[in-house]
Amino acid sequence: METTRDRPHVICYLAVSLDGRLDGFEVDLEQYYGIAARFEADAILTGSETSVVAIEKYSGVENTCDEGPAPARAAPGDERPLLAVADGRGRVRRWSVFQEAPYWRGWIALLADSVPEAHRAYLASRNVDPLVLGADRVDLALALDRLRAEYGVRRIRVDSGGRLNGALLRAGLVDEVHLLICPWLAGGSSPRSSFVADDLAPRRPGDTARADRGRVVRRRVRPPLLPRYTVKKRRHPVPPRESRCSGL
Image: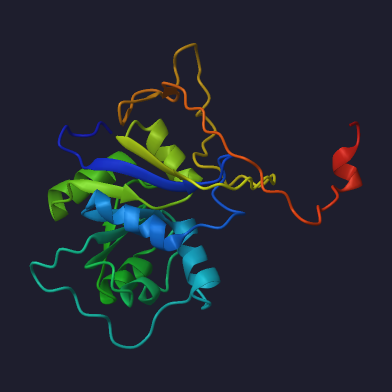
């Protein structure tokens, strides 16, 4: 689906290591969210994987359905942003983790049509708005259009992992990318990089993305950046595994 011209302005804001990873290093959360507040977003967009990790790992509870009274909706005029979760399979269940936090005025689940009606009814009973946006997966372009049309969202900050970032970038839906570059080299081989998508590699010369004057037009930074850091060495270096040094 083509996006309308008045779709929300989308900002991907990421804390990354020097080698472009999203995990395996320390982030100054006060600094990170202090900067995030400057974007004055009407909605925060995140993915189901990020949400489940927030529930199970950081909140320490199981991702099971909530019980008890549903939280109240915010009063009219509340200027806090909305929280929208791209959850095409209906994986996120314990919404109370987000509803009990003071950061958002409302909650929206972006679902595929394949999500069972029972789960949609459960969400509605918890004052989470279910939006159906595609047959088997969430149509992100349609999601942005409906957030603009039905909720008046003009500015979105994406707070998610590499898969949602990559899907938005490949779909041409990202307007700005902001990187908080943390002075760490994380290493590792897991796929937690900033933008993950099977088809992000250029299909032909020039078919890449370039960041130019604050807006993404292709996938290359112009002008190139040359950060310089000195390496703080461990007092007791960790010897590499033999299997990783074979052939060196």
